[in-house]
Image (tube, rainbow, N blue to C red; front, side, top):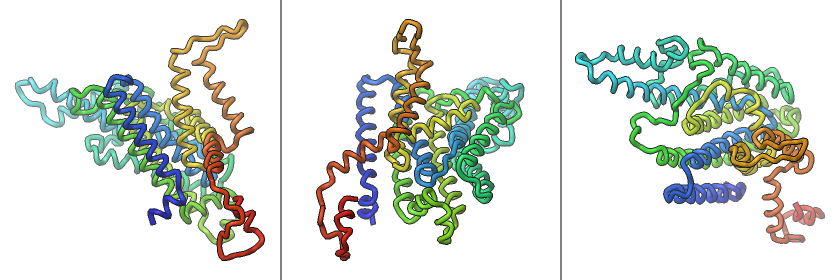
Length: 407
């Protein structure tokens, strides 16, 4: 069974092997001082973005659902883990500060003090209802998956049962993301409004551990999540389920005519994509240190689509390549380290012009190379494929053997 799976998915061992080698190499270089802590964090966050792009490719590249709301699932995953990080870290600080009192503080006094520390920026000291499980790490880890999945399940059920497709569905997913972002900007939403959740890079109980070590832990966790996510997505798209998804993408009416529950398949893959994206966000934002509603603005979902398109839609490795390449190039051009170019009447400021370059690259890839960067991998594998012209490909001795050998 494993052999047949790897035979259908030859990219799996290659991607996992490169991921392992890259992670070990980065770890060795960071341990020797060859890489800064900030760059290791950038690489860890890049792996999280690759996982989010992988989930995006699952719904867009294989099911044909251009979702512009996946960034909402990404941010929600960050909010869920961020609630525990802020609560646990603040509890430790408050308990330490009150430890010297003659009369030990009660648990309620500690909780009130923690609430004042967290929500004082929005003029409150009470824990909102949505923070009910913020003191439990297992509960918040479960919510990392359950909250994005529940949102995707409800939204998808309403949209797919109404048979909303194409650009209309994309607009609806974008509207969902914008509505959620605008709601979270309000202080009454319970997530500190536009302040968001900050200080997430400080892990509770590990104040003595340097950030250089913490960044490596998150790098390993991000690499593991990406590897497992790639395995899961490859398993999903390689069997009958994946064949039906591709059928829905290419001709939804025909698949429905054949008796398959199209809406059920679309809802399942959309919910699975949301769960994977939520996990990616839960690993990303502790490395970024902050999550706020601005992260949910629709432009961020468009970035996901651009990464998948540049990498190669409908190829899992293409989504990973696109996200990693564009993310690292973006970090390079927006770092402020590149000198601006003075071209006479035009001054090229890389930080401002990077988005123009990214948009231009997206247009070029769409028009000239629809297979994206992943198409280069296809070209290389086709050149390495042995010549089999005229080979007996099966019991059928029909006249199409030569054409089949070329496929």
